[in-house]
Image (cartoon, rainbow, N blue to C red; front, top):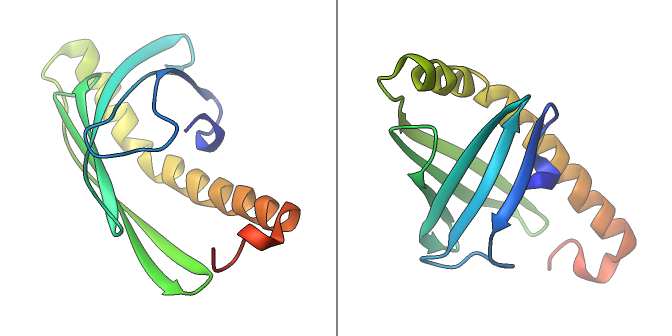
Length: 133
Protein backbone atom coordinates (compact mmCIF):
# COMPACT_ATOMS: atom_id res chain seq x y z
CA UNK A 1 0.00 0.00 0.00
CA UNK A 2 2.78 2.42 0.89
CA UNK A 3 4.48 1.75 -2.47
CA UNK A 4 1.44 2.95 -4.44
CA UNK A 5 0.41 5.95 -2.32
CA UNK A 6 1.42 9.31 -3.81
CA UNK A 7 3.36 11.96 -1.98
CA UNK A 8 2.63 14.11 -0.04
CA UNK A 9 0.64 11.31 1.64
CA UNK A 10 2.78 8.85 3.58
CA UNK A 11 1.60 5.49 4.84
CA UNK A 12 2.70 3.67 7.97
CA UNK A 13 1.47 0.09 8.24
CA UNK A 14 0.94 -1.00 11.85
CA UNK A 15 -0.52 -4.43 11.17
CA UNK A 16 -1.24 -6.27 7.90
CA UNK A 17 -1.00 -9.82 6.57
CA UNK A 18 1.51 -10.64 3.81
CA UNK A 19 -1.40 -11.74 1.57
CA UNK A 20 -4.98 -10.54 1.99
CA UNK A 21 -7.64 -13.13 2.83
CA UNK A 22 -11.28 -13.03 3.89
CA UNK A 23 -11.65 -11.49 7.34
CA UNK A 24 -8.12 -10.10 7.58
CA UNK A 25 -7.63 -6.68 9.12
CA UNK A 26 -5.16 -3.96 8.20
CA UNK A 27 -4.24 -1.17 10.56
CA UNK A 28 -2.37 1.83 9.20
CA UNK A 29 -1.89 5.58 9.42
CA UNK A 30 -2.11 7.88 6.42
CA UNK A 31 -0.12 11.04 7.03
CA UNK A 32 -1.68 13.91 5.05
CA UNK A 33 0.99 16.49 5.82
CA UNK A 34 1.08 16.85 9.61
CA UNK A 35 -2.36 15.21 10.04
CA UNK A 36 -2.28 11.51 11.05
CA UNK A 37 -5.35 9.58 9.86
CA UNK A 38 -5.46 6.27 11.74
CA UNK A 39 -7.43 3.56 9.94
CA UNK A 40 -8.56 -0.01 10.62
CA UNK A 41 -9.97 -1.89 7.63
CA UNK A 42 -11.45 -5.37 7.29
CA UNK A 43 -11.05 -7.41 4.09
CA UNK A 44 -14.34 -8.91 2.86
CA UNK A 45 -15.96 -10.51 -0.20
CA UNK A 46 -12.65 -11.94 -1.45
CA UNK A 47 -12.79 -13.74 -4.81
CA UNK A 48 -10.87 -13.98 -8.07
CA UNK A 49 -12.91 -10.99 -9.22
CA UNK A 50 -11.90 -8.71 -6.35
CA UNK A 51 -12.26 -7.82 -2.70
CA UNK A 52 -13.69 -5.12 -0.45
CA UNK A 53 -11.95 -3.23 2.31
CA UNK A 54 -14.40 -1.80 4.85
CA UNK A 55 -13.37 0.81 7.39
CA UNK A 56 -13.95 -0.38 10.95
CA UNK A 57 -12.32 2.72 12.42
CA UNK A 58 -11.11 5.80 10.59
CA UNK A 59 -11.82 9.29 9.28
CA UNK A 60 -15.17 8.51 7.59
CA UNK A 61 -18.56 7.70 9.05
CA UNK A 62 -18.61 4.72 6.65
CA UNK A 63 -16.22 3.59 3.91
CA UNK A 64 -16.36 0.58 1.61
CA UNK A 65 -13.82 0.26 -1.17
CA UNK A 66 -14.45 -2.48 -3.72
CA UNK A 67 -11.45 -3.51 -5.84
CA UNK A 68 -12.70 -5.36 -8.93
CA UNK A 69 -10.51 -7.14 -11.48
CA UNK A 70 -11.44 -7.83 -15.10
CA UNK A 71 -9.15 -10.00 -17.23
CA UNK A 72 -8.45 -8.32 -20.56
CA UNK A 73 -6.18 -11.06 -21.94
CA UNK A 74 -3.49 -13.42 -20.65
CA UNK A 75 -1.11 -10.63 -19.64
CA UNK A 76 -3.47 -7.79 -18.77
CA UNK A 77 -6.02 -7.10 -16.06
CA UNK A 78 -8.11 -3.99 -15.59
CA UNK A 79 -8.76 -2.76 -12.04
CA UNK A 80 -11.93 -0.91 -11.06
CA UNK A 81 -12.25 0.95 -7.76
CA UNK A 82 -15.73 1.55 -6.37
CA UNK A 83 -16.15 3.65 -3.25
CA UNK A 84 -19.23 3.97 -1.06
CA UNK A 85 -18.67 6.34 1.82
CA UNK A 86 -20.32 8.77 4.18
CA UNK A 87 -18.52 11.80 5.56
CA UNK A 88 -18.88 12.44 9.28
CA UNK A 89 -21.15 15.28 10.35
CA UNK A 90 -18.40 17.02 12.27
CA UNK A 91 -16.83 20.41 11.49
CA UNK A 92 -13.25 19.09 11.38
CA UNK A 93 -13.69 15.44 10.27
CA UNK A 94 -16.32 16.39 7.72
CA UNK A 95 -13.86 18.78 6.08
CA UNK A 96 -11.10 16.15 6.17
CA UNK A 97 -13.44 13.55 4.65
CA UNK A 98 -14.56 15.81 1.80
CA UNK A 99 -10.95 16.79 1.12
CA UNK A 100 -9.97 13.11 0.89
CA UNK A 101 -12.99 12.31 -1.28
CA UNK A 102 -12.17 15.11 -3.73
CA UNK A 103 -8.59 13.83 -3.97
CA UNK A 104 -9.58 10.26 -4.93
CA UNK A 105 -9.24 10.74 -8.73
CA UNK A 106 -5.62 11.86 -8.29
CA UNK A 107 -4.94 9.05 -5.79
CA UNK A 108 -6.30 6.32 -8.08
CA UNK A 109 -4.60 7.74 -11.18
CA UNK A 110 -1.28 7.67 -9.34
CA UNK A 111 -1.91 4.15 -8.03
CA UNK A 112 -2.71 2.87 -11.54
CA UNK A 113 0.47 4.43 -12.95
CA UNK A 114 2.66 3.25 -10.05
CA UNK A 115 1.25 -0.30 -10.14
CA UNK A 116 2.08 -0.55 -13.86
CA UNK A 117 5.62 0.65 -13.17
CA UNK A 118 6.13 -1.85 -10.33
CA UNK A 119 4.77 -4.75 -12.40
CA UNK A 120 6.91 -3.75 -15.40
CA UNK A 121 10.01 -3.71 -13.18
CA UNK A 122 9.13 -7.14 -11.79
CA UNK A 123 8.67 -8.60 -15.29
CA UNK A 124 12.01 -7.15 -16.41
CA UNK A 125 13.79 -8.60 -13.35
CA UNK A 126 11.99 -11.97 -13.38
CA UNK A 127 10.46 -12.73 -16.80
CA UNK A 128 9.48 -16.25 -15.65
CA UNK A 129 6.94 -14.77 -13.20
CA UNK A 130 5.77 -11.91 -15.39
CA UNK A 131 3.12 -12.09 -18.10
CA UNK A 132 0.76 -15.01 -17.88
CA UNK A 133 1.78 -15.88 -14.29
